[in-house]
Structure formats: C-alpha cells, structure tokens
Amino acid sequence: MTAPAPRCPTCGSLLAAHDQHSLLASGERLTPWMIHDLPRIAWIVEYRAGELTDEERRVVRDATDRMLRALESDPV
Image (cartoon, rainbow, N blue to C red):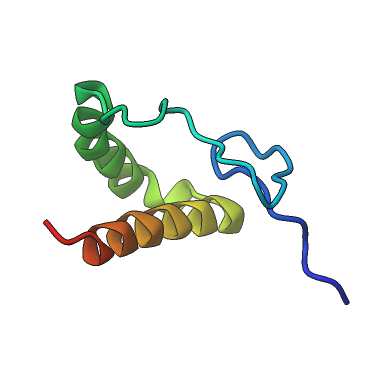
C-alpha cells in the first residue's frame, strides 16, 4: 500500500515536493485575528465536544498537535 500524496493542511490541494503552500506570504506574521480566534475556537470545541464526529475530533487533535509541536521546536 502506498502512502497518500501530501496535501496542503489549509486547502487540501496536492503538494509537490517543492511547494511552499501557505496562507501567509513569505515573512508575513500572524495577524491579530488569527491569534485572538484561538481562545474562541477552544471554547466552541469544549462547549460542543459531545457533538463532534470522529473525523472532527481527529481534525481538532491534529491541529492542536501541530501547533504545540511548532511552539516546542521554535526557539524564542
């Protein structure tokens, strides 16, 4: 069995090995709305956790794992 083709985590499009796919332009910082939405998103997930499908739970876990790994590997 072959591994699935890599996809953009944002839009789901197929990625070539050389693609640098991102919503942000090179060198652009996160905008305040991206950071300020995280607590609201967390609250919604907490509030609606019982309604999430298995797939939605996987998406939430994957996203939080990726963000935590990024913070842990980035020396400040």
